[in-house]
Image 1 (tube, rainbow over the protein chains, first blue to last red):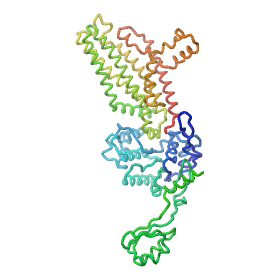
Image 2 (cartoon, chains in turn orange, cyan; image 1 turned 90 degrees about the horizontal axis):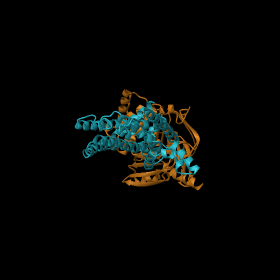
Image 3 (cartoon, chains in turn orange, green; image 1 turned 135 degrees about the horizontal axis):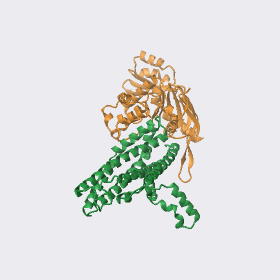
Image 4 (tube, rainbow over the protein chains, first blue to last red; image 1 turned 90 degrees about the vertical axis):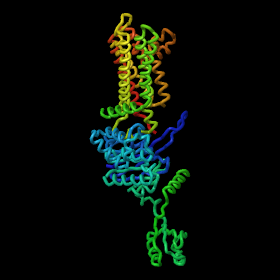
Length: 312
Length: 268
């Protein structure tokens, strides 16, 4: 049994008032997510990521196709007990405090008062909401609301959690916290399905990703399996390198730039073993500052795919 | 059932924290105060004027609560997108509709109760000032228990209006929903005229259309027993029972329609 399975899932929206015409927001999405997987759902803005998540949460109904979560049709109340959902840029009730909001949602899961209090308190600690938990939510910043949103998504110890742009609106510290939370969920065996347009998030967390462009699935697999993300070179920064030594190795270097006296940023070609050149340089007095793989960015990939789609 | 209860309690909490609600109660109480001042200018009729104005104020401010909070119940959730996280919880959409309705009815009942206590208190004070609970030229005693019948009918009428507001709020904007609800409230008081349209118009299709509208639109006029009660005229129990049965059947139909629309709706 898959955690999430869709088959030919499509959604049309009507555009225009007098003579509405259909706009295809999602086109025949077929995918399967294994239980325990952390699955990244990537794509530029307007690609259909949020539409897919809304379809899976049955906030909107599909034009065609079907979807199942944990082997049951979407919308099944029994399944809703076993899943969590963070909407994009979540917004809650102004007049409730974070504690009250989570207490209200916990009551809908059927937790008793003692269990509710314990869960709410633990979760708010976990997402870093301190004394502010007793303030009305209208006084919360976007980042704090995002943290509350994440807390309500995992309130019921879900087996599958859907996160729509979970890093959105968070500062670097918040992003790190969310990353750690997703890793903890993964370690607990929870299936995490999250949408993002930031490749780095997917790289750090996902076992597999799917890429959506203009409502169509254009790639799916492990990060390393997707050709677009293969390493196409290396970015090497070394110190203690004399111009004479650099000249000796020019044939093995694609580009070089001096960033400080005897310090160079070198662009190496696609080579599975950049360490050989590094070892040779170090033998001649150079020392390593940094070595990073150069990949096509997700943005580059999106642009190329959009251009491909438009040219059809 | 449990989900409906939790949603209803949540709506009640939302309404109680909404400052508009306090203002409305305050205004109702202020109006009763004004009725007391007016009564000073009308020798011998003060109790009757207070009874009239008090019931009218309850009706009017109850209507404001029912319409302005009723239309926001669903549309605000959709507009502010708080509905996304809520509908992902283990609840059915129809439970949300019924829970929201139950919460607002609870709010209304609490408000009417507060207003009733204040109303009887004003009447009690007036009777005490007059030095008598009943005078021969009064048509009914100052603290007439029959006033509760009129208040109960106001309550039922407002429950229908709330269900109408909720129905409109499931598919239209708050402004349109408010206009439609108030329009239907006004039409509901003249609904009986539609039944006898043949006395005014000759065209058969128009008469049939009017007859159909009579059955579809709410018939609120029979709930208005304020004048009879204030004048001490007996209101038969049969009418009260019939009104109650009509209100519950009509509310059930409205909630079924609201649930049906809400269940099929896309939240883009």
